[in-house]
Length: 308
Image (tube, rainbow, N blue to C red; front, side, top):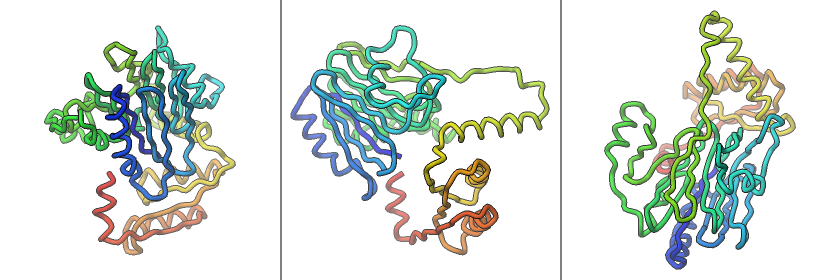
């Protein structure tokens, strides 16, 4: 949905040089919309799809607040903006941060209170960070970090072992020493003049109440959960585009969207002879969907691979 980079660096000229240097690197695709804000020792830049939700607020006195995506607060599912996020996260609450639903990343900075960064409950939106005594950098990818003079690019074998064993990042360990991915259900909290830390604010509830139920009931419960999730997250008045690969996940999502009368069209990348394309077209015909295919030539694959 978006690429972003945040930096807190008290050396003004060093921070400005870094911002100028990475300005042209923050957008991996040409049609993304770039944005930025500054406040005190803080600078942020982002590149986001023109239809993606974003809210930002900054001034010299109160610092900066950025919300990329949609975040909902309390049982009434009140959609919040950057100003509301600032009031919820700063100063950091003594007990626990309020639980926000949705798909988002939020950043709040105050010159006297520090920095708070968090994201969706399941950690789907990637948040990486690098901290030393000179600088704090937070971003959707660690690739931008290497352009700062205080960053030491050093391989982390622990991160590679975790990825090879599980195909996932384990314990926040990445391929770079000193770079961590924010753990699921955690906030990055860096109070002014204090050591930064990850603070847990959400842990998925664990229950045994469904253990004795038959498999058919489990399927019904899952069906209900997926339907409720779509109903709460999707705006029925908007037109969506579904990347229909023909695989199980995209087929299932297409079926649920159709069942709930949500307007959407389907898109598949590839050529006519691809198995995925053949299956996707059958699914689109079966569901009565508008379907579009886009062919990517072999010469373009190295470019798109470099964006991962």
